[in-house]
Image (cartoon, rainbow, N blue to C red; front, side, top):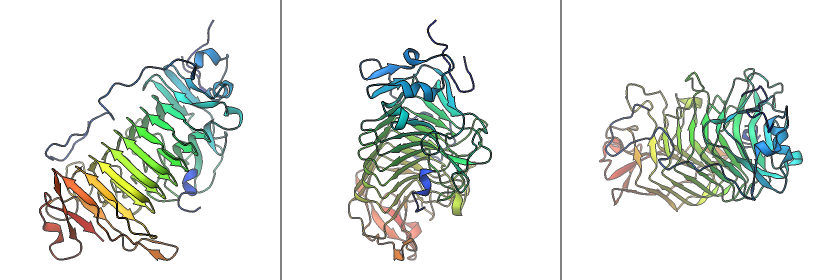
Length: 403
């Protein structure tokens, strides 16, 4: 059963990131490189039960919206959902949110857990009535001010909203949150890799020790049109962690860590998250104004852009990894056993973008120390652009450092 506002079950009997708050593929032939069609080969968990959880069925009353059921949760429990279609009309909860968890009337709910990809959440098409600024109508789902928040095992889809744009999921001020086993299909909409056109699929804000795992973010809508930008963002966060997550087919942007201290990823995969130069470009992983220990283990970074020359390549000019910090150099960046497709140059080296022209408040990028890159047990050396011959080094021994 599906209804508009959606109960599938009938019952028993301005700064850069402030703006963001409103905010089987053909692969190049690379030895040992595969990208799965799902985020992880592991089995998704069963719908949980127990004292920490309460079922949708036990709280539902005839005519309820999903938000209405969330508001009935007591005892700081997690609401579990059956398979079916759930949704909302307009972005009227919280601060331009479609669904709001953790504050106000939903303060006693600690999260949502579905029953797999057939638990589908999405806004009613063209129901957005307010412009929060710059053509952004809000966020589809926000959880805020909750320790140990949980979002797991459901699908978030997007719909057109009167020409406006929106973020998919916001995790705001939620220390130790766990975001896992999600599938976003066109779950956010944006038009550029930077504000005001940048939104996120999942935006983690002002939160410590948040883990995103076993998640897939597909930037295409149901018709296969790329509508989403920047699949994941950690903004003003600490101890960020991303595990076994796959992002692909975006319009612009990339996974970004902004003003984030300590970053760890493992088996992160991306494929073609951007489509052009300028505002439509994007790297594989982006770091801005971040610091601390940064380590990426076995990232698979397939830009499939201008330099790839595959049959289905886009015109993205993004590099595999970008790093910028106008406050300090970063001396503890490790890239362990990465895989990648060809970038600029003639030999197919892994390429870092170190943007000398990156400025904030009149200060220029201070990155000078190259990361430690290990491939097949060999520590790669740096080849500096634009020194003559920089792009012709052996990719088994060198990575490119592009200024």
